[in-house]
Image (cartoon, rainbow, N blue to C red; front, side, top):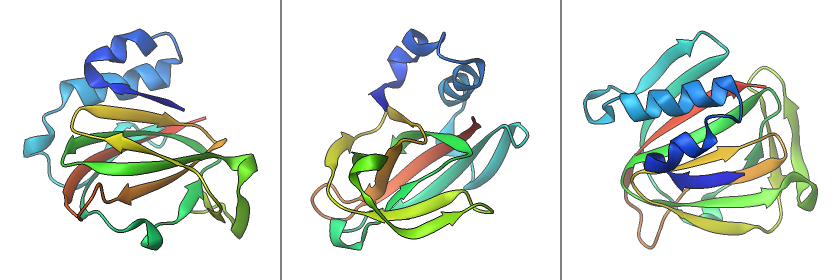
Length: 149
């Protein structure tokens, strides 16, 4: 897991070409004028999901993890808490769903502040609980870029 501000994205340009492309897309796109939905960057290898939602209480959250894609999650507007735990520290509650690339888990983890301009890179070993309220529920615009591994 990597968490940082978008202005520091160039520090990660040698990680992998697809991650570099994902971070460049975040840097070069005006998300204030982008409609929610899917945007292909490199077909199914790299694509962005622009989402608008209201954050929720942690008691409503679910731990999830993916196998086929890395997540690069970026908060364009609003703020939320992002849960993080190593996959090995949690218990599977719903087996892996290959079609939708996720499994659900339960257990304990840590929570990180995601404010506008913050991105997080989550690999297959990184379970996460997104969309958690930072205090009271609030509106968030987030971009989730799926990067094939």
